[in-house]
Image 1 (cartoon, rainbow, N blue to C red):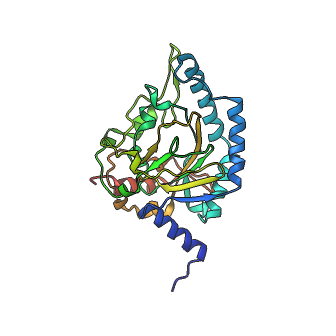
Image 2: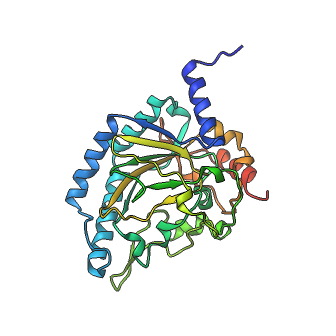
Image 3: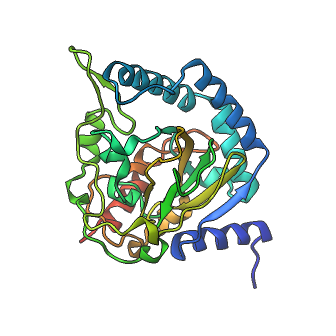
Length: 298
């Protein structure tokens, strides 16, 4: 006899569909407009409409971007609002472990910039030591479409691809500043980690992918193991978005190695996640067991 509450049963069905079937769940929420308004006010104070192809302007752009990233990641209101969205969809927050909220800007014509490779690669988040059972909550702050949006390749969800993820080590990555790193050298130059951004080495044509037309007030939830990436921005305007990565205790405990189809990276990014209800760091025995059981070739 099935004794689960209907809401619990529905969210487990949704989670399984996301992780195993590659479903990309689209939803609307009025609270997401609130998040967009907060971010837009900060962008107005720290404008990013600068010429990234001019070295002096690009330096200011990166400084402003770094400021905005810290404002977003440190905002309890934004974090709590995104948790509310997950809770409304059915995820019990006491069984969810999350990363901090991350802000992203894709400048107009960024694809022509010599340092744009890291933003242009088709990748699975697993290539960066993200758990294969991880789900991503992606919130557009701008209108996103084929001219500037996110592209998915659902048909390749379970297809092993040649990639260079074996070159990625999370500990080394973190020692250089981690995700969204910002470093300014003594000569005034600004850079990221300077390390490998792993990707599929024989990437598919983006025209074969799925590119949702989506805007503020909407969100996507998808499996981090999807092959995905950022389209060249030919819209003439910057594209802004937020993301919150999360795993459930149930999926971490299951440690299903079948979800890891082609990842060779080292480390487990879930070790940095915190419980959405208590704020406690993901238990070491939980993420270490997950890493050991699901590591490619183990």
